[in-house]
Each structure stands twice: as structure tokens, then as C-alpha cells.
Length: 233
Image (cartoon, rainbow, N blue to C red; front, top):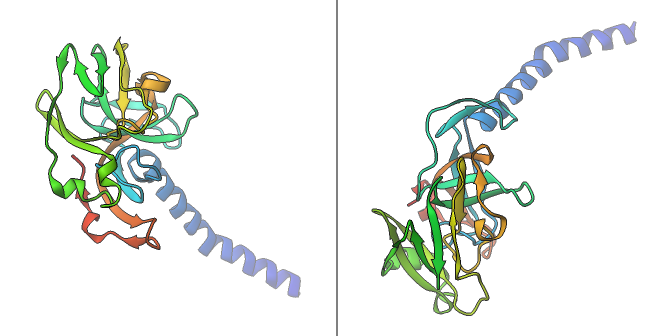
């Protein structure tokens, strides 16, 4: 009798509690897989734009619609543009990375002493505002050089570190069809397309458009409130 009663309670739990909970979890994960998600940024390869501890919002519908939990495309309505920050699966090891699109299909990309050339035209460099520079700890700032890089009216911060050994001269190469050339804004400390080549379109997850939250890993993971819900340049 007790065994039958226990069985009835278990079936009731599965029907009334566990099944709705499972459906909710599946819907949530499907939403994150195909519509929107956030991405933790554990490294400084996109400094000073994105710093360690930022979590960025990823719009997975920016370019296309995918089958949840896969990279299969159901429909596509746009493609990444030069200057946008995207999340993609690395062709090197399959990890999710956050980088900036520097070259689109057909672009001729060259780097000469950390100066970027796109289709033979040099990028313009101007002083970077102190607000962005001050996101880097004051003790680290003297080790770096900061600038605002502009390519065809698209501007964003970049940072270099003269003391590091880095591929400051690269190319020229022409970006193949259906592929994209990615670079980190932290030009001398970024593992990007200079190392593993261009990234195929189907590896791109979505566009990173804002910092959702930011936690300071160097200070007991305290929130950086001023970075919450800030748009990425």
C-alpha cells in the first residue's frame, strides 16, 4: 500500500512539477542558444573597450536565425560589418571569442608597425579620451599607448604595449569570400586572425552590443556599476 502511494506521489510530482520545470529550462536554453545570450570576457584582448570581468550582451538575431544548439542557419538577413564586435567560435580550438571585425570579404588587410591599412587606405589615429583610458588601472597605463582608430568613418579605441613581443606587421592578405578578419582592440596582446586566419561566416554567433554587468576580478569581484548597461563602440 505504501509503495503504491509513493508511486502515485512520484507520478504526480513528475506531471505537475518536474515536467513544467523541464519545459521552462529547455525554452530558456533554446532562447539563449538562438536569440540572445551574454558572454563572459575573462581576458584583456579587447581592452580598453572591454575589460576583464565584463559580461557582454550577444544579439544572436543580428545576422541570422539558427537552429537552437547548432550552427545551422535557418535564415540570414545581414552580415557582420567592418568595425562591429562579434562573438564567434575560434577556428583554432573552437572556443567562443569576442573580437572586432577588421576585414570583410574582399578586403585587403595589412598591418605595418601597428598601423592598420584596409584596401590600401591607412587608418587614422587620434588621441583617446581620458574616460576610456581610465578604465585601465592607473598603475598599468604608463605601459600602454592609447588611440582612437578610424577606418572609413568607423571609430573605436585601440591599445598597444611597446614592451611586448607582438605581430605588429602582418600581411597584406585578401579576406576570402564568406570569411572575416578579426582583431582585438588590445593589438599587442590578442590571439586573433593574425594567428589562426580568417573566420568563416558560419562560426559567427552574433553581435556584441553592450556591457550588461561588470565585476572587478582584482577587487573581490565587486561590481563596476558605471559599466552596467553601457553600449560598446
